[in-house]
Length: 392
Image (cartoon, rainbow, N blue to C red; front, side):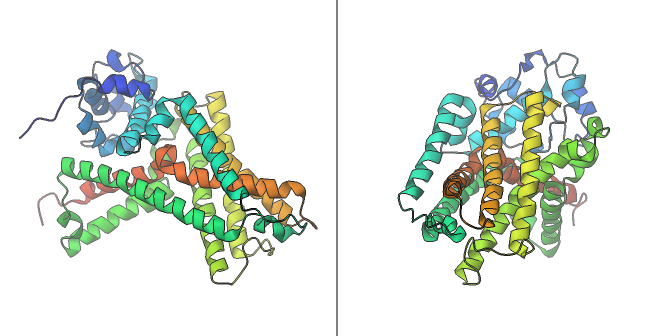
């Protein structure tokens, strides 16, 4: 068997992504002993730190355990040498996102904050100017706000953006899944080879997507000890869940709205009662997103918990984009129900569309990519747990 190559530049590279000085770590194992998610062979974060120290890049990037961490901070609080393993794990995930991305966009956003911010600003300006170049009249009717930018242009641009995002996301997910599969010895037959294999894969899919990613079960039950004295609306798992649910809900409502418009059932942006299913779905999802993002920003500003004590420019950029999309969506809803269209409504609509397109386009290269990479890693974790121990 060929030995895995050693990359002596791995640890310095990880430091560019925010990794703290782990040279103080002498592999005592205290972090693994205190981690509520470490069990069985999942000896993280100790194993992840060791990979970085000796330059085992491939082993680090193929570790599904890297994504099992929710950065509760217990390992950092109890580390006898103050090596801050929790922040190291967060930095390693940033590094992994950039490594799976072949476009170098993620690397730029994480390691070159000034250039990354400039790219984000220019991208939003591009979308705004591109949309404005085809703008329609401002005739004072509320429906005219949503026809200020031609619906067909928004729709076609959105399709192009989604295709690019899906391609970029799939490329990253395939790279990650292949790396984990090779390391764990998982073959396609382990997923599709028999009825029993399909049943195990189905269960693993439910655990990774339904139970953990959407339901936040282990985050809520195992990584929330220091938060239990707080009200539910201030607890980290709940804020994280509301943000995720809000984003997915808005994405779903937007897709349904355009789908209904294509079928001719309702014009995009047409006034409907607040209890209209799609409108209600979007309103509730928007409220969840705005609350969740606002509290995430407040916690980061106050360094309210271990995971919020260190923030990158990319972290703030993502929160800003999510917040602008959520708030401008509510402002547009208000404008829609006014007797006549306010002049500012047209410009808020232009801002909303430009930032929403930018957010979707940058999703695979920012922390929002966790919503894809974590379920994939957790799928392999659940699949390993479901494998028969003595053979079938």
